[in-house]
Structures are given as structure tokens and as C-alpha cells.
Image 1 (cartoon, rainbow, N blue to C red):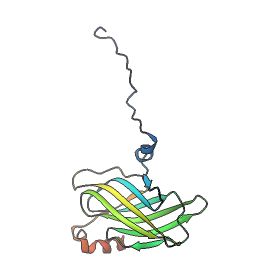
Image 2: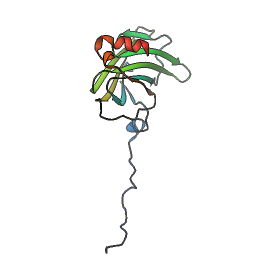
Image 3: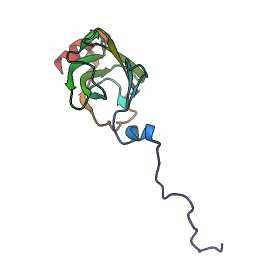
Image 4: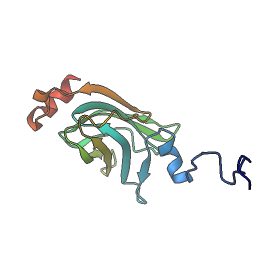
Amino acid sequence: MEDGEPRERTHSQGRVHFDESQAAEHAGEIPITLSPDGKHADVHLGFLQEKHKYEIRIVVPFYLGDVIHLEQRNPNVELVSVKADIKKKKHVINAKLITSHHGLVNEELKLACPDGSHFELTISARVLGRGKGTPLLKSGIHSLGALDDADSDASSVAEVLKHH
């Protein structure tokens, strides 16, 4: 090929392709991985900011029962509501999350089902330290704002969740 002649491009035009298991995550949705026994789900929120409050909406793609309640308390997560959609065979879980420190965060929510069984959610996020940028939030995650320094100690996290 001589100088000045255009080169043929043999690869795609800059598009990134994901397999089906990653498609939802990269489309801005909150990916959920269910365990084979249906008693546990891993929820990946992506990137969040340190010392912030978030409202999260998680859709569990199967029906858990009519009355679901929180079995085990978590100081960084407040369960706001659990709504059943019997026709679509799913549950929508709304919660508030506090990110008190940077790094990988794994928070557990244990829900009691009407039949006496339990359903556990592991909510994971990569939390960026202060000054490390503002992440693009996935669909179903809304920032409720930054915590004041007075709000950031562990003893006041529950109070912050109650008031927001």
C-alpha cells in the first residue's frame, strides 16, 4: 500500500459487543444473578460514590409470596417496600443504601417469605472515594445526596436512612 492511500478496515467500526449474560449490565440495568435453588440473588449496582445515600429499585424475576418482610436488619440498607406483581411473576424491592466507605461493598438483605423460607439478596457495588469522579448510575438507582461528615459515622447511619 502506498502512502496516502486509505487503508481497508477489517474490524468493526468501534462497537463493543457483549455476550447475553453481560448485555443487561452494559445497557444500564441492574444485573441480578439468581442461585440455582432460587433462595439467593446477587445484585450488582456498579459504581457508586463514597458517603452518599441512594434509593435502589431491584426487580426479582420470580414470585416470592404475598407477604414479605425483613428478617435481618442491616445498618447500611433500609428496606422501604416489597411489592408483588403476581401477573408478571416478580417482586419489586425498594431500598435505601448508605455507602459509608470506598472500595468493594457487599451488603446483605434477608427476607422472610410466607411459606417460612428465606430469600437473601447480596447487594454489591464498587464505591469510589471522594474526588474520584461521579459515576453514571444504572437504571433503578437514584442518588439522594451526599452524607454530611456528622452523618458518616456508623452510629448515625440508621438515623440518616430514616430521615431521607
